[in-house]
Image (tube, rainbow, N blue to C red; front, side, top):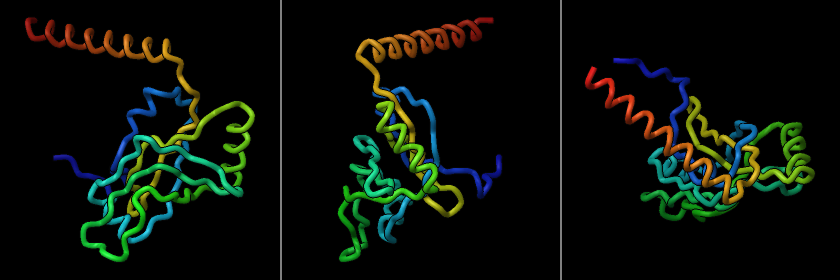
Length: 159
């Protein structure tokens, strides 16, 4: 039985739609400012990144549209599920990302949320949008790879 390291990241949620809609050029790690009941909901895995994106406001980076369900036992301490949440990054990184987004037409999209030790982290991707034919190409490539893997697996059964 393999030991799980305490420093190994434990994935909470992935944004599969982002990989379908965008080409991911670079990935960055950011902390996220959460309240106590939100952290408890995150630990329970009640997070949805599907329609979320990042935005710069006054030199700060925020994630918009991320849904964290209210904590079951949180009563008055629960916050709005889709409120804007601040991402924690170095000022240099935020300014670099802001320049790329405004000049080259990139988009910042949260790709995954995970625990790094006791801290909640968000993996933010610097993305370019895919056209419809790009989506078809990537779907066809994924289907071809799946078929090749299936054939190789079946072939190895009979050897």
